[in-house]
Length: 111
Image (spheres, rainbow, N blue to C red):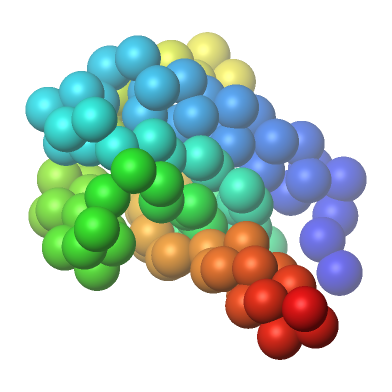
């Protein structure tokens, strides 16, 4: 169970990472739409697990690997945004959130 502080930091990171992917990371995304669906922060606030929904691209794994490769650049941009709220920027781990694909598959099966 997450503490109130973890929940607040998760919401802060989700909002700021969403804005970074939407406005500042055009060289990484190259036209793909990226939505930050969830962020989980560890108890010691050192690691944040970021779940992304990827749209508008055929090769989702390649895009996810590109995001993982540019993790330091994204962390730097995030640090500039949250430097007054957090002492240290947590390390970012990116995962694909495939819950929407799962829902689509269930709907297709039900039809």
